[in-house]
Length: 385
Image (cartoon, rainbow, N blue to C red; front, side):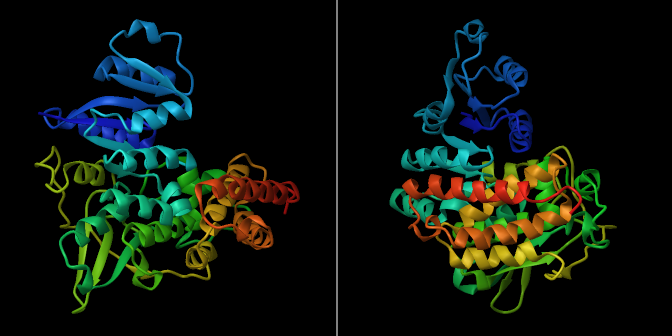
Protein backbone atom coordinates (compact mmCIF):
# COMPACT_ATOMS: atom_id res chain seq x y z
CA UNK A 1 0.00 0.00 0.00
CA UNK A 2 1.41 3.46 -0.87
CA UNK A 3 2.71 5.62 1.97
CA UNK A 4 0.42 8.55 2.68
CA UNK A 5 2.35 11.80 2.20
CA UNK A 6 1.64 15.34 3.39
CA UNK A 7 3.62 18.01 1.54
CA UNK A 8 3.95 21.50 3.01
CA UNK A 9 5.12 23.96 0.37
CA UNK A 10 3.86 22.14 -2.71
CA UNK A 11 4.45 25.01 -5.14
CA UNK A 12 8.08 25.80 -4.25
CA UNK A 13 11.20 24.23 -5.74
CA UNK A 14 11.36 21.49 -3.07
CA UNK A 15 7.66 20.83 -3.47
CA UNK A 16 7.89 20.62 -7.25
CA UNK A 17 10.75 18.11 -7.06
CA UNK A 18 8.86 16.09 -4.45
CA UNK A 19 5.84 15.93 -6.73
CA UNK A 20 8.10 14.59 -9.51
CA UNK A 21 9.13 11.76 -7.21
CA UNK A 22 5.51 10.98 -6.26
CA UNK A 23 4.51 10.93 -9.92
CA UNK A 24 7.44 8.64 -10.70
CA UNK A 25 6.51 6.14 -7.98
CA UNK A 26 2.69 6.16 -7.64
CA UNK A 27 2.74 2.63 -6.28
CA UNK A 28 4.96 3.83 -3.38
CA UNK A 29 3.51 7.22 -2.42
CA UNK A 30 0.08 8.84 -2.28
CA UNK A 31 -0.30 12.60 -1.71
CA UNK A 32 -3.10 13.07 0.84
CA UNK A 33 -2.37 16.61 2.01
CA UNK A 34 -0.62 19.72 0.73
CA UNK A 35 -0.16 23.41 1.38
CA UNK A 36 0.72 26.40 -0.76
CA UNK A 37 1.18 30.10 -0.21
CA UNK A 38 0.30 32.27 -3.18
CA UNK A 39 0.05 30.19 -6.36
CA UNK A 40 -3.61 29.26 -5.95
CA UNK A 41 -4.05 28.30 -9.62
CA UNK A 42 -1.22 25.80 -9.28
CA UNK A 43 -2.70 24.46 -6.05
CA UNK A 44 -6.03 24.00 -7.78
CA UNK A 45 -4.39 21.98 -10.56
CA UNK A 46 -2.68 19.81 -7.92
CA UNK A 47 -6.01 19.21 -6.19
CA UNK A 48 -7.45 18.02 -9.49
CA UNK A 49 -4.43 15.81 -10.18
CA UNK A 50 -3.88 14.19 -6.77
CA UNK A 51 -7.28 14.55 -5.03
CA UNK A 52 -5.79 15.23 -1.57
CA UNK A 53 -8.05 14.92 1.44
CA UNK A 54 -6.70 18.11 3.09
CA UNK A 55 -5.35 21.36 1.61
CA UNK A 56 -4.07 24.43 3.47
CA UNK A 57 -3.85 27.93 1.97
CA UNK A 58 -3.44 31.40 3.50
CA UNK A 59 -7.18 31.84 3.00
CA UNK A 60 -9.85 29.34 1.98
CA UNK A 61 -10.44 29.94 -1.76
CA UNK A 62 -13.82 30.68 -3.31
CA UNK A 63 -13.51 27.52 -5.42
CA UNK A 64 -13.14 25.17 -2.44
CA UNK A 65 -16.79 24.08 -2.71
CA UNK A 66 -16.04 22.56 -6.13
CA UNK A 67 -14.02 19.81 -4.42
CA UNK A 68 -16.31 18.22 -1.80
CA UNK A 69 -13.84 15.39 -1.19
CA UNK A 70 -11.19 17.84 0.05
CA UNK A 71 -11.13 19.69 3.37
CA UNK A 72 -9.65 23.17 3.10
CA UNK A 73 -7.74 24.74 5.99
CA UNK A 74 -6.17 28.17 6.31
CA UNK A 75 -3.36 30.03 8.04
CA UNK A 76 -0.86 28.96 10.66
CA UNK A 77 -3.40 26.87 12.54
CA UNK A 78 -4.17 24.98 9.35
CA UNK A 79 -0.47 24.31 8.69
CA UNK A 80 -0.02 22.91 12.18
CA UNK A 81 -3.05 20.65 11.77
CA UNK A 82 -1.79 19.49 8.38
CA UNK A 83 1.64 18.69 9.82
CA UNK A 84 0.11 16.36 12.40
CA UNK A 85 -2.57 14.76 10.22
CA UNK A 86 -3.34 11.44 11.96
CA UNK A 87 -3.56 9.34 8.79
CA UNK A 88 -0.28 10.63 7.33
CA UNK A 89 2.70 8.29 7.18
CA UNK A 90 5.18 10.96 6.09
CA UNK A 91 5.35 14.74 6.56
CA UNK A 92 7.54 16.65 4.09
CA UNK A 93 8.33 20.26 4.98
CA UNK A 94 9.34 22.22 1.90
CA UNK A 95 8.28 25.67 3.08
CA UNK A 96 11.01 28.21 3.79
CA UNK A 97 11.56 30.65 6.62
CA UNK A 98 10.44 30.47 10.23
CA UNK A 99 6.95 29.65 8.99
CA UNK A 100 8.23 26.08 9.04
CA UNK A 101 9.06 26.05 12.76
CA UNK A 102 5.64 25.39 14.31
CA UNK A 103 4.66 22.75 11.71
CA UNK A 104 8.01 21.05 12.41
CA UNK A 105 7.24 20.99 16.12
CA UNK A 106 3.73 19.66 15.51
CA UNK A 107 5.03 16.85 13.29
CA UNK A 108 7.62 15.85 15.90
CA UNK A 109 5.11 15.89 18.76
CA UNK A 110 2.74 13.77 16.66
CA UNK A 111 5.58 11.25 16.21
CA UNK A 112 5.48 11.62 12.44
CA UNK A 113 8.11 10.39 9.98
CA UNK A 114 9.55 13.82 9.19
CA UNK A 115 11.48 14.93 6.10
CA UNK A 116 12.53 18.58 5.97
CA UNK A 117 14.24 21.14 3.78
CA UNK A 118 13.39 23.96 6.19
CA UNK A 119 16.86 24.94 7.31
CA UNK A 120 15.68 28.20 8.91
CA UNK A 121 13.75 26.38 11.63
CA UNK A 122 16.74 24.19 12.48
CA UNK A 123 19.19 27.10 12.36
CA UNK A 124 16.97 29.27 14.57
CA UNK A 125 15.79 26.67 17.06
CA UNK A 126 18.12 23.68 16.72
CA UNK A 127 18.51 22.97 20.45
CA UNK A 128 14.75 23.09 21.00
CA UNK A 129 14.05 20.86 18.01
CA UNK A 130 16.67 18.35 19.16
CA UNK A 131 15.09 18.28 22.61
CA UNK A 132 11.67 17.45 21.14
CA UNK A 133 13.20 14.88 18.80
CA UNK A 134 14.91 13.15 21.72
CA UNK A 135 11.70 13.10 23.74
CA UNK A 136 9.77 11.64 20.79
CA UNK A 137 12.63 9.28 19.87
CA UNK A 138 12.39 10.53 16.28
CA UNK A 139 14.77 12.04 13.75
CA UNK A 140 14.61 14.50 10.87
CA UNK A 141 15.65 13.15 7.48
CA UNK A 142 17.11 16.14 5.62
CA UNK A 143 16.13 16.86 2.03
CA UNK A 144 18.85 19.33 1.02
CA UNK A 145 21.35 17.54 -1.17
CA UNK A 146 24.33 18.19 1.11
CA UNK A 147 22.70 17.12 4.36
CA UNK A 148 20.97 14.20 2.73
CA UNK A 149 24.35 13.00 1.46
CA UNK A 150 25.85 13.23 4.95
CA UNK A 151 22.79 11.54 6.47
CA UNK A 152 23.14 8.70 3.95
CA UNK A 153 26.81 8.23 4.82
CA UNK A 154 26.43 8.51 8.59
CA UNK A 155 23.67 5.89 8.53
CA UNK A 156 26.22 3.43 7.16
CA UNK A 157 29.28 4.17 9.29
CA UNK A 158 29.67 4.28 13.10
CA UNK A 159 29.83 7.88 14.30
CA UNK A 160 32.86 7.19 16.49
CA UNK A 161 34.84 6.39 13.34
CA UNK A 162 33.93 9.67 11.62
CA UNK A 163 36.73 12.23 11.82
CA UNK A 164 34.75 14.97 10.09
CA UNK A 165 31.95 15.63 7.65
CA UNK A 166 32.51 17.72 4.53
CA UNK A 167 29.81 19.80 2.87
CA UNK A 168 30.49 20.79 -0.72
CA UNK A 169 29.78 24.21 -2.19
CA UNK A 170 29.70 25.23 -5.83
CA UNK A 171 31.36 28.54 -5.02
CA UNK A 172 28.55 30.32 -6.85
CA UNK A 173 29.10 32.76 -9.71
CA UNK A 174 31.99 34.60 -8.03
CA UNK A 175 34.44 31.87 -7.08
CA UNK A 176 36.66 32.39 -10.13
CA UNK A 177 35.81 36.04 -10.79
CA UNK A 178 35.04 38.11 -7.68
CA UNK A 179 32.06 40.42 -7.53
CA UNK A 180 32.58 44.16 -8.03
CA UNK A 181 30.60 47.30 -7.15
CA UNK A 182 29.08 47.02 -10.63
CA UNK A 183 27.77 43.48 -10.09
CA UNK A 184 24.07 43.33 -11.00
CA UNK A 185 21.18 41.23 -9.72
CA UNK A 186 21.27 39.26 -12.98
CA UNK A 187 24.98 38.54 -12.47
CA UNK A 188 24.24 37.16 -9.01
CA UNK A 189 21.29 35.05 -10.14
CA UNK A 190 23.32 33.42 -12.91
CA UNK A 191 24.25 30.36 -10.86
CA UNK A 192 26.67 28.05 -12.68
CA UNK A 193 25.14 24.69 -11.72
CA UNK A 194 21.89 24.91 -9.72
CA UNK A 195 18.45 26.21 -10.65
CA UNK A 196 17.08 27.67 -7.41
CA UNK A 197 14.91 30.51 -6.19
CA UNK A 198 16.33 34.03 -6.13
CA UNK A 199 16.86 34.20 -2.37
CA UNK A 200 18.81 30.95 -2.15
CA UNK A 201 20.83 31.88 -5.25
CA UNK A 202 21.96 35.14 -3.63
CA UNK A 203 22.88 33.21 -0.49
CA UNK A 204 24.92 30.84 -2.62
CA UNK A 205 26.79 33.81 -4.12
CA UNK A 206 27.70 35.13 -0.65
CA UNK A 207 28.20 31.55 0.61
CA UNK A 208 26.04 32.35 3.62
CA UNK A 209 23.76 29.56 2.44
CA UNK A 210 26.65 27.20 3.12
CA UNK A 211 27.12 28.88 6.47
CA UNK A 212 23.51 28.15 7.37
CA UNK A 213 24.07 24.56 6.24
CA UNK A 214 27.08 24.31 8.59
CA UNK A 215 24.91 25.43 11.51
CA UNK A 216 22.14 23.08 10.39
CA UNK A 217 24.59 20.17 10.17
CA UNK A 218 25.78 20.93 13.70
CA UNK A 219 22.25 20.37 15.01
CA UNK A 220 21.11 17.63 12.61
CA UNK A 221 24.12 15.40 13.24
CA UNK A 222 25.01 16.67 16.72
CA UNK A 223 28.62 17.23 15.80
CA UNK A 224 30.92 20.06 17.00
CA UNK A 225 31.74 22.76 14.47
CA UNK A 226 35.35 21.58 14.45
CA UNK A 227 34.17 18.38 12.75
CA UNK A 228 32.27 20.19 9.98
CA UNK A 229 34.26 21.31 6.95
CA UNK A 230 33.43 22.91 3.59
CA UNK A 231 35.11 22.36 0.22
CA UNK A 232 34.49 24.20 -3.04
CA UNK A 233 33.31 21.75 -5.70
CA UNK A 234 32.30 23.73 -8.81
CA UNK A 235 30.65 20.79 -10.62
CA UNK A 236 28.07 20.23 -7.84
CA UNK A 237 28.05 16.48 -8.46
CA UNK A 238 29.52 15.37 -5.12
CA UNK A 239 27.15 16.64 -2.46
CA UNK A 240 28.80 15.48 0.72
CA UNK A 241 31.72 13.46 2.10
CA UNK A 242 32.89 12.03 5.36
CA UNK A 243 36.46 11.47 6.42
CA UNK A 244 36.84 8.35 8.55
CA UNK A 245 39.39 7.83 11.30
CA UNK A 246 41.70 5.90 8.96
CA UNK A 247 41.83 8.80 6.47
CA UNK A 248 39.38 7.23 4.02
CA UNK A 249 37.00 9.65 2.28
CA UNK A 250 33.57 8.41 1.23
CA UNK A 251 31.29 10.53 -0.93
CA UNK A 252 27.78 10.71 -2.37
CA UNK A 253 27.47 11.86 -5.98
CA UNK A 254 24.38 12.45 -8.11
CA UNK A 255 23.11 14.85 -10.76
CA UNK A 256 22.46 18.36 -9.45
CA UNK A 257 18.68 18.02 -9.26
CA UNK A 258 16.77 17.95 -6.00
CA UNK A 259 14.62 14.96 -6.96
CA UNK A 260 17.60 12.66 -6.26
CA UNK A 261 18.13 13.47 -2.55
CA UNK A 262 14.36 13.79 -2.07
CA UNK A 263 13.83 10.29 -3.45
CA UNK A 264 16.62 8.95 -1.24
CA UNK A 265 14.92 10.52 1.79
CA UNK A 266 11.46 9.28 0.88
CA UNK A 267 12.62 5.69 0.37
CA UNK A 268 14.87 5.60 3.47
CA UNK A 269 16.02 3.15 4.83
CA UNK A 270 15.71 1.58 1.39
CA UNK A 271 17.00 3.22 -1.77
CA UNK A 272 14.93 4.15 -4.84
CA UNK A 273 14.63 1.57 -7.62
CA UNK A 274 16.36 2.31 -10.90
CA UNK A 275 14.87 5.48 -12.32
CA UNK A 276 14.47 6.79 -15.81
CA UNK A 277 18.00 8.14 -16.06
CA UNK A 278 21.31 6.62 -15.14
CA UNK A 279 24.23 8.62 -13.76
CA UNK A 280 27.84 7.95 -14.69
CA UNK A 281 30.96 9.78 -13.55
CA UNK A 282 32.90 8.71 -16.65
CA UNK A 283 34.00 11.76 -18.59
CA UNK A 284 33.10 14.17 -15.80
CA UNK A 285 35.62 16.39 -14.05
CA UNK A 286 35.58 16.50 -10.26
CA UNK A 287 37.46 19.41 -8.70
CA UNK A 288 37.82 20.34 -5.03
CA UNK A 289 39.30 23.53 -3.60
CA UNK A 290 39.71 24.96 -0.11
CA UNK A 291 37.37 27.83 0.66
CA UNK A 292 39.00 31.27 0.29
CA UNK A 293 37.42 32.56 3.49
CA UNK A 294 38.77 36.05 2.93
CA UNK A 295 36.56 36.23 -0.16
CA UNK A 296 33.50 34.84 1.62
CA UNK A 297 33.47 36.40 5.10
CA UNK A 298 29.83 35.49 5.74
CA UNK A 299 30.76 31.81 5.83
CA UNK A 300 33.28 32.59 8.57
CA UNK A 301 30.64 34.67 10.35
CA UNK A 302 28.22 31.72 10.28
CA UNK A 303 30.79 29.51 12.05
CA UNK A 304 31.28 32.23 14.69
CA UNK A 305 27.56 32.80 15.17
CA UNK A 306 26.91 29.05 15.34
CA UNK A 307 29.48 28.63 18.10
CA UNK A 308 27.95 31.48 20.11
CA UNK A 309 24.53 29.90 19.69
CA UNK A 310 21.54 31.21 21.61
CA UNK A 311 19.49 33.62 19.50
CA UNK A 312 22.37 34.66 17.27
CA UNK A 313 21.75 32.11 14.47
CA UNK A 314 18.13 33.29 14.38
CA UNK A 315 19.31 36.91 14.16
CA UNK A 316 21.72 36.08 11.35
CA UNK A 317 18.93 34.48 9.36
CA UNK A 318 16.54 37.42 9.91
CA UNK A 319 19.20 40.00 9.03
CA UNK A 320 20.04 38.12 5.87
CA UNK A 321 16.43 37.78 4.73
CA UNK A 322 15.82 41.52 5.05
CA UNK A 323 19.11 42.61 3.49
CA UNK A 324 18.98 40.16 0.59
CA UNK A 325 15.41 41.26 -0.09
CA UNK A 326 16.65 44.85 -0.34
CA UNK A 327 19.32 43.78 -2.82
CA UNK A 328 16.84 41.90 -4.99
CA UNK A 329 14.67 45.03 -5.05
CA UNK A 330 17.65 47.08 -6.24
CA UNK A 331 17.84 49.16 -3.05
CA UNK A 332 21.44 48.21 -2.22
CA UNK A 333 24.40 46.75 -4.09
CA UNK A 334 25.61 43.17 -3.82
CA UNK A 335 28.77 44.09 -1.93
CA UNK A 336 26.64 45.91 0.65
CA UNK A 337 25.17 42.58 1.79
CA UNK A 338 28.28 41.37 3.61
CA UNK A 339 28.97 44.71 5.27
CA UNK A 340 25.41 45.24 6.47
CA UNK A 341 25.02 41.72 7.85
CA UNK A 342 28.29 41.97 9.78
CA UNK A 343 27.26 45.34 11.18
CA UNK A 344 23.81 43.97 11.96
CA UNK A 345 25.23 41.17 14.09
CA UNK A 346 27.31 43.72 16.03
CA UNK A 347 24.23 45.85 16.67
CA UNK A 348 22.11 42.83 17.64
CA UNK A 349 24.78 41.78 20.16
CA UNK A 350 24.27 45.12 21.92
CA UNK A 351 20.50 44.60 22.36
CA UNK A 352 18.62 43.18 25.33
CA UNK A 353 17.05 40.58 23.03
CA UNK A 354 20.44 39.00 22.40
CA UNK A 355 20.71 38.15 26.11
CA UNK A 356 17.47 36.18 26.24
CA UNK A 357 17.58 32.40 26.50
CA UNK A 358 16.48 30.49 23.42
CA UNK A 359 12.83 29.53 23.80
CA UNK A 360 9.66 29.66 21.75
CA UNK A 361 8.73 32.85 23.59
CA UNK A 362 12.05 34.57 22.86
CA UNK A 363 12.22 33.75 19.15
CA UNK A 364 9.68 36.30 17.90
CA UNK A 365 11.03 39.39 19.74
CA UNK A 366 14.61 38.51 18.77
CA UNK A 367 13.62 38.04 15.14
CA UNK A 368 11.71 41.33 15.11
CA UNK A 369 14.67 43.18 16.64
CA UNK A 370 17.06 41.74 14.03
CA UNK A 371 14.70 42.69 11.19
CA UNK A 372 14.36 46.23 12.56
CA UNK A 373 18.15 46.53 12.68
CA UNK A 374 18.41 45.27 9.10
CA UNK A 375 15.77 47.68 7.79
CA UNK A 376 17.47 50.60 9.55
CA UNK A 377 20.82 49.68 8.04
CA UNK A 378 19.31 49.39 4.58
CA UNK A 379 17.61 52.78 4.90
CA UNK A 380 20.95 54.34 5.86
CA UNK A 381 22.69 52.87 2.80
CA UNK A 382 22.50 54.90 -0.37
CA UNK A 383 22.05 53.09 -3.65
CA UNK A 384 25.40 54.42 -4.84
CA UNK A 385 27.36 53.18 -1.86
